Image (tube, rainbow, N blue to C red; front, side, top):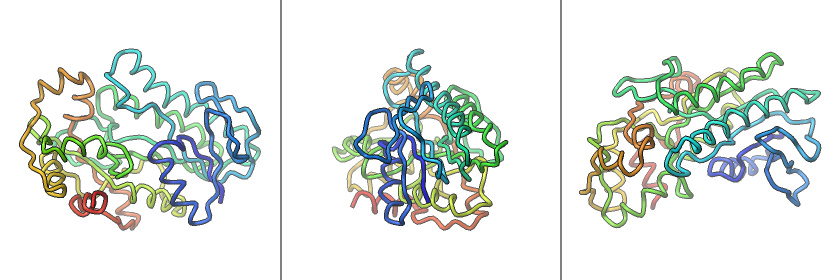
Length: 297
């Protein structure tokens, strides 16, 4: 089976390629730059232009393109880039796919649990409504941008990703240095829920979606056991055998990070993987302590 992949250089994309190549999946990457690999295709996600022919035998498209949310403080200019890198690239990819004589059977697009916004302690499933705020609006428009493919019979799945935990990058790598120095601490009052997932389960679930035709629409890619920021902080400190004595007050976070603090660090999203549970998926790492131990030791 051949997969067309965007965002291949990121944490998720590189992990997907590394694991699924072992299982005889083939990949064509849409990338921004020239490549010596004859299976790569140069494209411009802002315009949708491609600079060499697209294979006709693509079965699955996995779309992970999008500017990193932690690229800097959220100015109006950066927020526009964050939005356009997701929505425009998705619309252009859909347009590109529609040109193929044989449409793919499946499109998997990235989204995020930010779709739900800050909903405090409320338990959220795929049936829960869209929240408020910048990130919630981005996620809604991101998912909507792919819907036009449904009219050609392509199954569409939106991955509402929680915080992806990996030892090769992402949030955990950003937190680890401070925690190793014994300077980790809860953020704000620590009561905000954090929906997380191991990188191992992300890759496993993507393959599960490919082979399970009953799964479609939004799918929460989160562990079945969301935790509060306080619980996460104490567990990470325990695994690293370091104290967690330095809380960061809400006002300091807002002064340092602006809107990022409210949207990403202090927002509470208590999300559960209802569709995956119903489909019978068995998580490799459902427990936070076990996950962090696996990744860090």
